[in-house]
Image 1: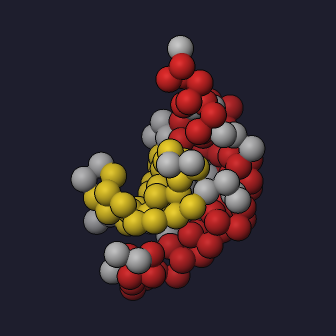
Image 2 (image 1 turned 180 degrees about the horizontal axis):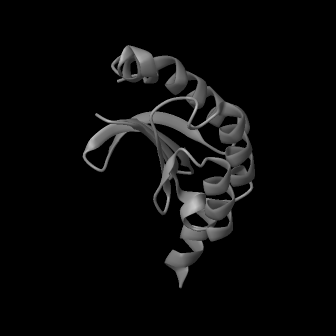
Length: 130
């Protein structure tokens, strides 16, 4: 499935925000490539750095989610962005939101810009060598 096909399969009211978020991720992190792939029993848009998942963008029954591995591995990022997005629901490496008001694109762009400097691939490859 292509990314436009995947986004068009989401509820109509979510399609614009998913498109905007997808474009913002690609514009602010040149280290990733995107594709629709399965993760956690669902198809979502995965953004991979050298074949390692860095972000995932999903639309589930009740909300949308941004899975962000750099945030999961960096408590300071988690603390910073949970304060900037008080209406969103945070898990360790995941931000759940229902509309653009809970997760403005400019905040997403700032988060992804910060995360672009973190190489998930380097971290995971170093860990494998130990």
